[in-house]
Length: 273
Image 1 (spheres, rainbow, N blue to C red):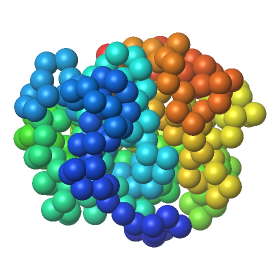
Image 2 (cartoon, rainbow, N blue to C red; image 1 turned 60 degrees about the vertical axis):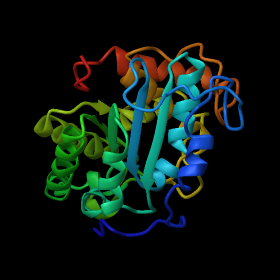
Image 3 (cartoon, one colour; image 1 turned 30 degrees about the vertical axis):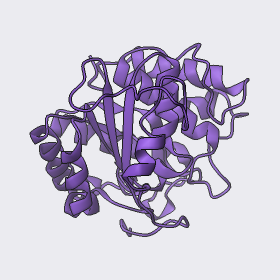
Image 4 (cartoon, rainbow, N blue to C red; image 1 turned 180 degrees about the vertical axis):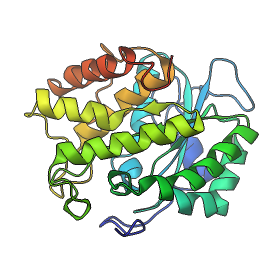
């Protein structure tokens, strides 16, 4: 296993502060370029949720933070989002990064979301890679007054053969177990994106969640992740929200319903109750 391998996507950081202020602090009028005041004022604002995503290409492909933010806005939930994400980036790299430390300290975040490199959690040895850097990041977030949430990702479509996991289902089971073990060790909640992804794949195989590489999300996959985060963070169902991201009109209601069911009906399992 090479936990630091790069994906086929260009390594990058989000744009600078000016671009973020224009686009990622959502406006009441909706989306970038609106003229209304930002929904999150400067300083700790009551009723405003700020979420920082620390991840890699699973976070930045299709811009999950922005998709989540626009979904939240359509549900009447004022949010501000930001991310630090490079292709193939691991929790260990985030923990060692000065950029991450600066970003965590830069805002009164409500949540800091942690995502490990894609295939690492499928391995039996995942705990030895994930625990120490995750604890560092959790402690750093707590010191800044933020809660932490783990981003339980989806497994590769073709499994993880090098880990002895020949099917997607077996690989997803390994990913789920690693994140749940880590969540229990650190007493933090989980956004069960991968678990929900599995059930959508089984119940609605007509919805394509993976890109052709069998790893990165389609627009529907990213929208599903956003729906799961909406349910996990706000403890509210995304069902009926008008923002559909890149999901089709027939896909979005299914993804909303699955996210509500898999998150809200199982809150104790994910540490959300």
